[in-house]
Image (cartoon, rainbow, N blue to C red; front, side, top):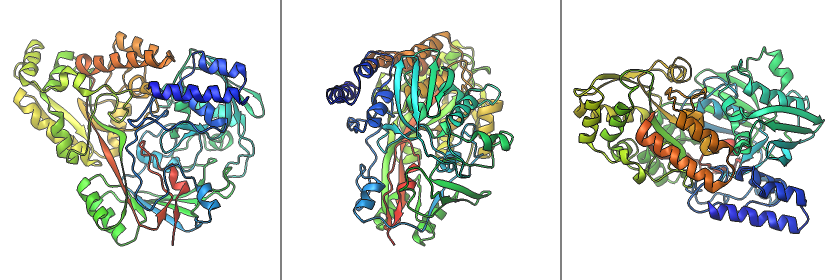
Length: 576
């Protein structure tokens, strides 16, 4: 983290010496109140590339300030730093054609502000743009926000890119941006993105190209959250014309226009010729084909029916690699969890929840589900190297059956109890974890009934009804430790599925999101992680895993990203 902070400060000093930033801007950026993601994005907006991340992953501002270095590009593909523009200038790129990517799960709605499923993100991230976006190494760089300035620690001024068009030909305006953010924080809308932006106190159109954002308190994660695909900028006119319902319709400023979705079969997207970047996308058509069975996806790539796909099974990935297919592999920031409903007896007793953690051997979860190809994780995923505490520091991560039995006896359950674990067969990881947990809790007399439900029902359960005892799920990338902690464990967060309500946690999380000194933030989140893992235990965290993305050898330019985002399909082309 110190290396990352020093590198960014060195670049600010250089920009000041070159006269590319003012004395006032330099003082604001270095005087506190601004997170590393904001500094990194500011440097990028000045046309100076941020320094590469440290070799061991994310930095002070979370993965938006560095990220995992585990992503590997296959041989024969462009290096991670190359862009579509660079390749096109060298005469290598071939435009046109249809790119078919087989995905494993159908979307659950297309509204970027409401849909929480990653399968939905795989659709809407091609249709919409955000104010900022992530590079392959998870740096934050400008997108619809051409530049920005920090007026003071609670006031940000953004220059909105001019000449940007929506897919219907209408121009992007500052009012559309204000409408988008007001929609996300409107309690009536109940957007899960609201927790990212609930520190916004007001938004103002200073002029036709300038947005001013006023904050209630200093908020270090702001710029990182603005880069998340779910913080999409939408058309005010289009949304109002559709009665604020974007579940099945979509129209943005992104590189692809949404053409059609055939339920549980495929989504089709066409190149938007008037995209503001001009040089992307490179293919004429993108098809996201839904093939839930992994063996079928392997058969399809072997038969050249698809161009790319994603695999979960390391054995299958090794098979295709051995057959000569390109393979993008990297440790991702997704991690597996069991949510514990802290509202229900006997799980409302923290001693019972502690007993569950002491009772299990997390290495067996990792070995069973992914053949050990991953890393045991805490409540902040292990891939977030500069934020995640080493699991060796968690007392409850050392399996101790006798300690678990003692805790259950103290709580009044010496003979155990019955409990239901809700899981979707959509992801084999979750089913495997359920079976291992069921087996490992038997010695305590805890009888786990595994209840399998359809994926959409599971999402409704965790996001709406909260009608579960235990629930298995995979959570994906957040650009800041605030996203992994406040998002899921603050008592007032809409995403607090476990129902944890602890004043100490709330106070720490509120301090963490307001603190901009990175060393102090690290201390706060270290304390939060220990409190959640060893004392309160609202979740059982298991492991981060690797992503495997096989492709045909003619697929060029794709860049894998630890967040699992597929936005770089816009820079992918077909050499055939």
